[in-house]
Length: 122
Image: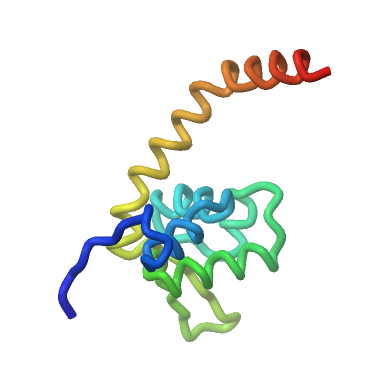
């Protein structure tokens, strides 16, 4: 298979499906956490406050299906499963961390803009 470049502005391009999959807060937060190394499900749930077990598993499966995350099962008692970023996921993690850092650095301005907008709308 030859590598091809997508076009997110083309409604027929499969890159839209990937963009849609990445444009979820849980995806972005899980990728950020996994950038620090492999994690078990329980560790991810503690790190990403507010995510339900069901949503965590669904998001991990979506990330695995798209090639961003690898799932590793260990033949132990009790069973142990870890998730880590693939090379593709690691290539995404810098952009995700940059976005998270931008949000944290600019949250004050965003909240101020929202308050001003809401005050005008009343």
